[in-house]
Image 1 (cartoon, one colour):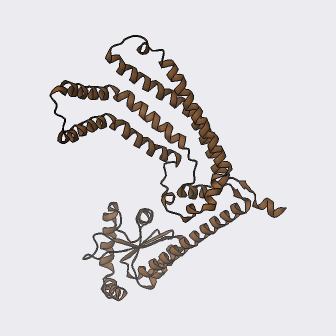
Image 2: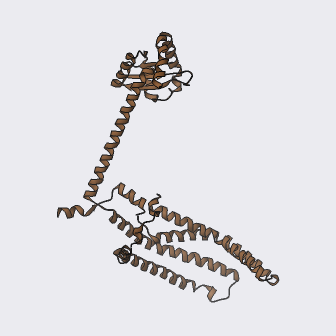
Image 3: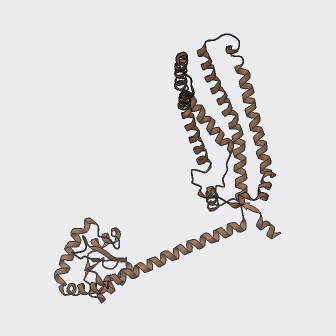
Amino acid sequence: MADEDQEQKTEQASEKKLGEALERGQFAKSPELALLFLLVAALAVFAFTIQSSSRLVADYAISVFTHFSVTEITRDTVTGQLGEVILTVGRAALPILLAAVLAAALTAAVQSGFRLTPEALSFSFDRLDPAAGFSRIFSKNALVRTGIDCLKLIAIGSVLYLGARGLLADPLFSVPVEAAYLGQFLGRAAITFLGRMILALSIVVVISYSYEKFKTQKELMMTKQEVKDERRNADGNAMTKTAMRRMARRLMQRQMLSAVATADVVITNPTHYAVALKYERSKDKAPIVLAKGENRFAMRLKAIAIENGVPIVENKPVARVLFSMAKVGEAIPADLYRAVAEILAVVYRTHRYYFHRLKSRRLEASI
């Protein structure tokens, strides 16, 4: 009994599992949402471009019928005339086609949470498995999808029936009207049908997407053991990262300790901070920080400096600012050029013998 309870998926999916599912393309997807976005985009573009598109087609039709009596129709001219028709209709329909493409892209982005899903595009042989395909056809999900499709058919059919019944009462079907009224009627009818279709389809989308969301969450639920394993792995990764950071810090400290022997000067606080600097006129544009430390590590830097005869200068404000602002391996901040230059000038005058030996020491360290 305990093993059965352990295997039941009773826990909500973790952030890690949700992220992996998104990368695989496993998220709530509703085909009806794509259709809804497409209709909304088409309606918006149609409402804004109907006058210009109608004028474009009307002007072309007037031009064709005006010159119809003098237009020569042969095998050679039909191709060009057909191309003009396609070009005119294409220019009128182009905004709607672009809106449809943008609507499709927006639908995919909204459903995926505006995240790329490269794994969803990869090919998998599991999709060719006949047994898996057969089970998908005769599954509970397929049954629900069939019900949603029937609901969609009923909604669209009702909209078409009610819309057509309302439009049949228009004067167009009972009394003579001007030719221009026909265009107005077609535009009004298209907007009416699209608007009612969007309203009906919105209800279907809410039902469809809610079901897909529920189904996906249920599929991604985890057992208690999976949650424990994931937490254990996360803790293990955190411990590994901590150990790697600790190792990198120790390695850097060793490099700093070995570099102190070739420093020009060590500036101290005197007990809290210590910063080792070097400056080679032919190589460095400004003094370089070789090492820095505080408290116990600062004392180790000072001990190595004393052991190797490196000049030590006590300057509390400069040491404090160097420790807080300067980075190891980089030049000191420009604001400290003057203060450090004064310290180096004093050191160069008072420790000439040390700097005479420093050249050969640096040469040996570089070999």
